[in-house]
Length: 190
Image (cartoon, rainbow, N blue to C red; front, side):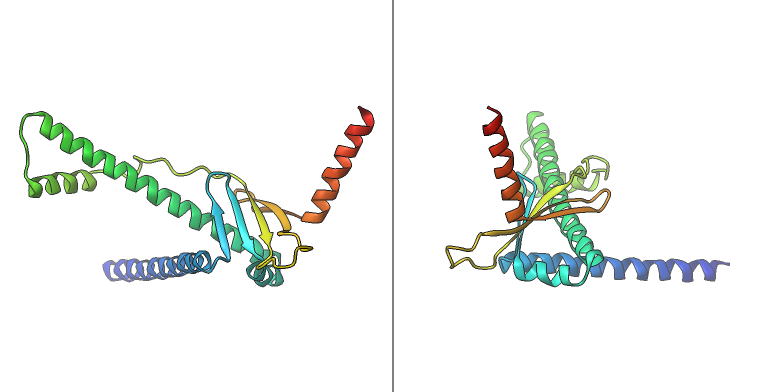
């Protein structure tokens, strides 16, 4: 029976490694998109700006591929946010431990400070930092280049909810027309 369990655990480990490899490749691809100015995430307003050529590739593959792309962007951004939160938490915990050690009147040398920091980071539990909340975000599909003054910068606007995987999209000109109609109604009623 132990041989069978070893076989199962090795097989599960291989599957996990393959899954993590694919995930890291996807995240590296999104980093390349950002460096190529095909993708931009505004973390303060939770807005995603996607260049038209990139959007056409994924929308052309169908709704499932488009949802998958938006979900992967969400996971990529959540991963980046979570990593920065962990980094901040670990650094503050390490600094606190070093300050407490120095407050006792003992001034450790550089090697002892490094040992204290390593001990603190090894003893941090995985539940110490909360995961980022799952919230819907807006996305904008923009022209790759707008040299023509008659062209608008934004083509499509939408919202994606990662929790329900609901995608709502509208053409930017339709949104502007609806806003103008609402403003005209308010002016006529006033």
